[in-house]
Length: 312
Image (cartoon, rainbow, N blue to C red):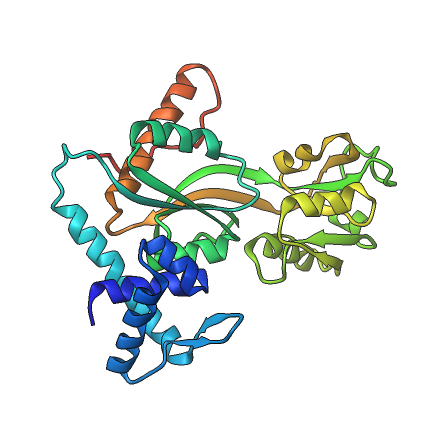
């Protein structure tokens, strides 16, 4: 067993494809398949279940993957630890972003980072907060921008609070409530809702608020993106609880009404609390410089505090 074989296992699991994994590893598919087959023979277990249409982890592979990821991450950190600080930064920055992040202008921040560190490859992963927090813990994501219900802060991670949002209710401009200055949860008890999938951090915020108020609600549409959620609202098919910035991104077809007793969402940046990689530390430093510049111009900045990790 060698480190390269472990890297191949991690990439195949991530891509669910030998072909795409080989492309990411800059090897031929046959070479990658040969190495994984050799590893499986050594272990005496199949790591992947292969068919003509899909590749998925076996039970043994799922158990093996967690340790393979940890080994690859540790090896990357070990290599970076002996790189001279004056050497131009290289490697891959893996950034996780929730679809409804509003506290950070992600494209602008990535452009700044790329100009400062042109040799660093940037990979972007979209997902819900629970999934991305787990990926940071596993070491497959270096830093993630999350949004969670107050009191549900992710554990085991370094956190920087970016913003606090109080949800609004998004309705069609033709909705019976569209002219109201504010509403309460009780005013929405008979409405049909669109929301994120059950169990996700975005969904829990609304579910918890209604449960605390002793109210039931009908979530008929479960969607994965804010764009689709607001599209359903615009067509009058549902109402939705969202943050104010997201509600305003669908134009005049959607009206945002303040919700007196609605849930609060806290946006965080989260990264490895123990040993952030050099590419992560450089990203945090770039983010702090951008925020300081925005504050100096009288702007709101991109987060509410200072990143405690320096670039050096």
